[in-house]
Structures are given as structure tokens and as C-alpha cells.
Length: 241
Image (tube, rainbow, N blue to C red; front, side):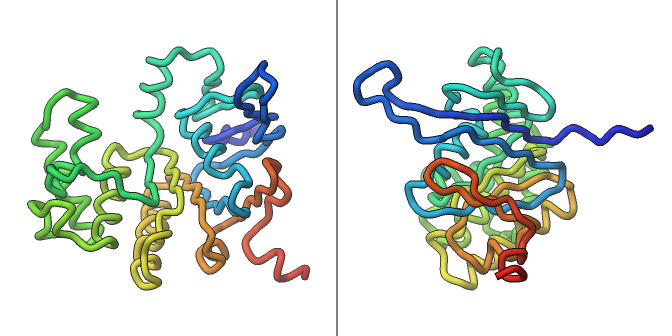
């Protein structure tokens, strides 16, 4: 009898409240339960203020839930201290944000190498070779020495993607990665994430307001008022409407 592999991400009854124990306590996530399998490419959709960014911060181990269980790569994060959380995040998760968060004084190559520099305390030859390969893969061969201010928005986002992929994460979290891009650049950035997902089997959870891009994902999870209201295969809503 074969057993199914554990999900790369498992949330059970996740709740998040702010100002806990005060008269202005407010709960923004109300019992979120969901799972993400290895190699899945999933869109997280929902209106502004629905809790998508808060949920992504919790999944990315940037915030802790008030209640509930969060497992990353089969590991329960509830009892981990800050050091262990940081280690697990760095070893497992790659982040791509709407705003690139590139260091303006660093070159494209240096920005991509940054996670490795932080992890190892120095820039190794192996890390540099890997960074150059990633930049070439995202179409930026020849731009290694350019600084963010010399690159277009789409090019900066490609650098950010290369940086997120530099440690070969098993889980990629992308928060509106195409939100500031034109349609052509958005399609290119989305395509890069999709290509990495298919080639390496890394799971990807992407927050997007773009219905075109959401429809191209394997599955859509819809969040409304801090609750999951749908978790369907792409295209299912259209088919049943």
C-alpha cells in the first residue's frame, strides 16, 4: 500500500487576530484550512481587504497565526523559535513581491546572490555561477552589472524572480508579482514562474487580481472576508456558471 506524499503546505483552522485581548481586537482570518501539493501552481484570489496578504505573510513565516496549525514541508511550525523559523523559511520558501525590493546600490548579479551571501556570509564562486545562470534563464544575460535604476520594471521583476529562485525553494510565494507591469511584461513574468514550476516541481502560490493569469493556474483559492469560499480547478466556475 503506497502512501501519498505529505503536502508541501498544510493549514488547519488558521486564525489571525490583531490587538488580542484589547477592546479593539479584530480577527481578520477565520479558520483557514487548505493544502498545497508539490508542483502545484495555485492562484489566491479575492477582493481587496479579504486577508490575502495576511494569509501569505503567515504562510511565508513572516507572521504567526493566533490559532491553528501550519505545516511547511511536513514540519509543524507552531513550536519553532525565531531562529528555527528563519532557517526553515530560508531553506524552503522563495518570495516574489509586487514591489521588487531590490537593493539600489547592488548590481543585478549581486541582488540575485544576496540570499546566498546572507546564508553563507560570503559570495562563493558557486553562488555567482548560479546567479549568472539564473539571470540568463530569465532573459537578462548581459545585464549582470546593471543596477536596478538602469532596468525597466519588467526587468527588475525578473531579477527579483531570479533572486527568489536562487536557493531552489520548494515553495514559491508571489504577492501580486505582475501588479505594476504592462500586459506583455506581466505575461512574461508569469511565464517564468510557470516554467520554473514545471521544470523543478516547486509549488507556487500566487496572489493576483488578474483573472487572465488566475485562469492559467492549476487551481484557484478564493478568499472573501477572511474565509476560503472556493478552492476549485481553473475553469470550473466558468463550466458550472
